[in-house]
Structures are given as C-alpha cells and as structure tokens.
Picture 1 (cartoon, rainbow, N blue to C red):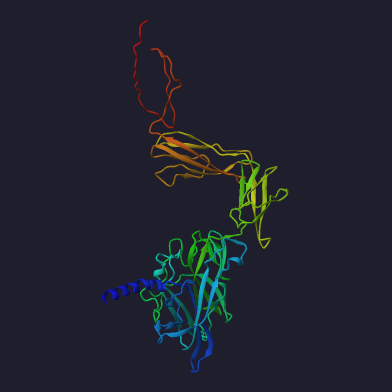
Picture 2: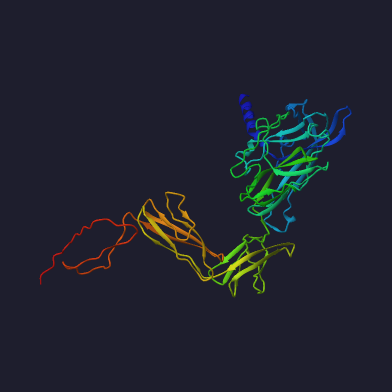
Length: 519
C-alpha cells in the first residue's frame, strides 16, 4: 500500500507543470453599466479574455469559471472575496494558410483557444478607484524573448477603474477594448505589421506604447483563488529584448494607431508582446489599459520588392541586379533600368538580371514583383551609380617597430576622385588603430606581420577595399645591390639599409675561404 501511495505522489508532481503550461495571453476589461441600486455605487461588467494553447485538452488547463480579485487602489487592500466569472463564450482563432497567396511557406501553427469570462459587480464610488486582477500559471515553454524556463512563470492580467480624484465622474468609464484580429503571419527577418488598435466607447483620446508583461501565480499553485495585490513583478526578458522592444530594436508601435511595424526578429518561435493604451479625458490621464499576448514568428516568405537605397558599379558597364529577399515560388520580376531601354522580366527565384549601360551616370532603377496572377504586387526603386574604372591601392614606407610607418593612398579613378578613407592598421595592442585621413602614419609597438586594410570611397559613390600584409621588424633590412661578385682587397662594397629614422650600428665581416685544388 505504501508503494502505491508513493507512485501516485510522484505522478502528481510530474503532471502538475503539464497541466499548468498553456497560457498564451489575456486581457481584462470592464464596461460601466450605470448607477447601482444603492446611492454612491456603480455597476460594472468585468470580462476576462483568456488566450489558451490550442493543444491544451486536459480539464486542468480549461477552466469553466475564473476568480477575479478586486483591490482598492488607495492601499491595494482586497475588497471582499474574489468574484467568480463563468465562461460565456469560446472560439478557436487560427491563421488560414490559404488566406494570403502573397506568403510562401505560410505558418500552420498560429492558433489560440480563446475563452471569455464575465461577471457583473457593484462597487462603491471612491477616491482612488479599483484594480481587478486574475493570475494563472504557467506560460508556454521556449518563449524566445523571455529568460528560460518560460514555462515556470505565470501571468497577471489586470485593469484599473478610475476613482473621482482625477475627474469627479472618472468612475463612469469603460475601458478600451483591443479589437484587431490576433492571428497573423509574421515572417522572420521580414517586414510585418501587427495591430493593437482599440475601440474607445467613451470617446476618450488614446495613446499606445509597448510595455512590460507581468508574472503571476506559480507552478506549485497555478490557479490561486485570490490574486496577489499590486504592484506586480515584471517578466524577465532575454538580452536584446525588453517590454518596450519585445521583438528587438527594429520594430516599434505607432502611438496614435497602435500599429506595430518594422522588421521581425530572425529567430522563429513564440514572443510575448504587451501593449499599454493610455486613456485621456479632457487632457488628463485617467486609465492605462493592457493586453498581453504571445505571437509566433515563422519561417514564412512574404512577397517583397527589396533593394538597397543605392548601388555603385565601378568595374564595368555591364551590371547585375537581384532582389535582396527570396520571394515565394512563382514570383515574376520586372526591371526598368532608367536609361530608356526596354524593361526585362524574369522568373529567377531572386530576380537576377544583367544590363549593359552605354554611359556613366546615376540611374533610377525600378523593380516590380508580381505573384498569383497580379493579386500580389510590390514595387520599389533604387539608384545605380555607374562609374567603372576605380582601382584602390596604397604603399607603405618604413618597417621598424616603435617608429612611424607612412601609409600613402595610391587609389586611381577614371571618373571622379577618392574622397573618403577608412584605415585599419591591424595593431593587436589597441582598438584605436584607425584613421580617416588620406595619408596617415602609424607607430607599431610589436613586431610581426600586420594586416592593414583601406576602405576607400570616391565622390561618385564607388567603394572598394584593399588589404595588405605589412611586416614590422626590430631592425631595418640590409639590401645588397648584387648577388655573387668578385671582391679584391682594395675594392669598396656598398651596403644599403632601408627605413625611416637615423641608423646606428656596427659591421662584422667573416670570410670563409675554401681551399682550391692546385693545377
């Protein structure tokens, strides 16, 4: 009997995290319903919108009712027992891979099981207002922008009802509600949009920002009857991410529209994003509303005409172009070269083409990409700077350690002239071994071969790089103006040392005379 009991306990310990790991986001909001039946009170409908992993099937992961805990914002004291909100609706939201022909390799795993829980409460009108909170553990595993293990932390979804300390009727407020479709295809390393737009039932002004998500509950107590009081602990983000940059530094939110735009991170997987919308009435901030959701970054391929701002062609009049992004299969590329020639059309996977220009100049090049019989179209332009005949180079005078070496730019250009220089002297003893002047000097503190690099740019936009190995010696090399020669006792012999500075030294000569056979 003791053995059976021990096994049961072990199974429960291992099963608990599996039951808990399912939360993918949430939003807690409310609607003002008018005065309560008692003077000085108001009625509100509280609603929790909970996002759950679509793979969650265990009853322990799927609540049919949830507790909502109410706190007085004056001192964060709990007001009575938590109110129980029954489930009122359920939907499965899933991205349809066939819904967007402009995306190649569309994601098939963008899915949320969304449950709504609602309850009506009556609250006394007070000075500071109320906070309503729900806590649940745990989030899903392997969230890219969170510190591991992400399935060991839960979530707090909370909202605030204003008091009358800011505005006399501030409590007569309904929170904004985020309305955008949550299922979206976000492709790694590609441009994307994702909306956190919200409806404002009271006509208040809204301002959006990205903010930090909260932790809540624990794996050992994943579903507390009462939420902990505010303030709440922020999530710990991985390096390169934060609440304000949950998708890295190349994506941001429009403060007026709630639209996130930018370049998605290159690592596929789940990311936590939290949006905060500030609610202003008569110029005063009365409320900050939050939504926390996990979004998926996939290895899909959106149709995109993508070129660098300009290109320099400095070797030949025959130039090559290609789209800077691989597009879905079947894309057609139409190139216009800006020189009056006929456009070229290609179905090459990256739109590669070659074109022969007749003369030098700066040309406006246009690219249009078409897919799905014209349902998907994107276009862009760039500048092509065609000035062939650019030859970078430099020479070095000197060789001795602790003495300055002279570097001289020898770049030649058929069109224009060198105008910018970036030298890197390869001195391993410092990170300051650089220069931006045409003919710099540098003094090395150690001997050996140094890798010297010059990046040179012309006033026509040509850029090229030249690299050389430069030997730094402890003594100047001795050069003899001959190889084998006959020297008599009264002859003179010239020795030549090369390098900068004043030379000091002594000369030791050793003769080795071999015996010659007599004839």
